[in-house]
Image (cartoon, rainbow, N blue to C red; front, side, top):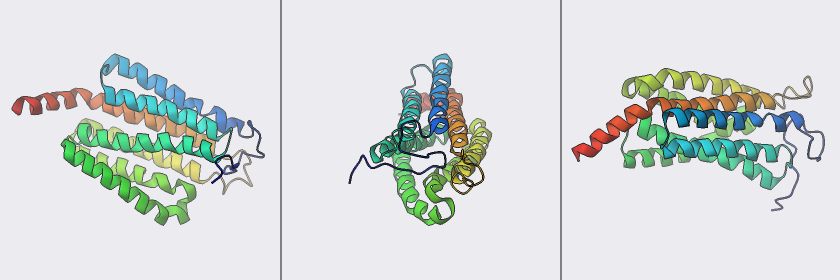
Length: 226
């Protein structure tokens, strides 16, 4: 495999040049803004929480990786784009199991591995409808599923998760419509995905910060009871 092979996957791109997707490239700044906003929130309310800080760093990496893909646009840049996103999805799912649903370590690891396997099994089945966005559909479903269970196990997180899931579905719609609407809207709609998805990542981190005091209280109780 030639990792330097050019990739033309988005409506805005008209050639192999570095700035052939200027709007798609620049709007990756939204991820950096989301990371900065999340870090400021972390400093105020969750300083010392290593798991949340890790996610914040990953959000910044999402922005950098996506910028590379929408400028360099090669196979190695595509890998730099998708890997941080995958890391965020599965790391967040694990932390959600632990901190929102308050499951034990073994259950959290098992369910995360199960979610990983299910994601790779379900995504190909949806590719005919969602195209390249099919890989994100399991993440959207997971947000709504966790929101539903959280209604009983962690009520403060339930409604914010459902709202975040709704925004994520809207952002996926813009990502999916990029190529189909290209003839009538040459700029494409992928840049809206960047902006909305950056908001989604920030809101997801904000939810973890919101439930952090409850999680720490439960964790101390579990530790004291051993």
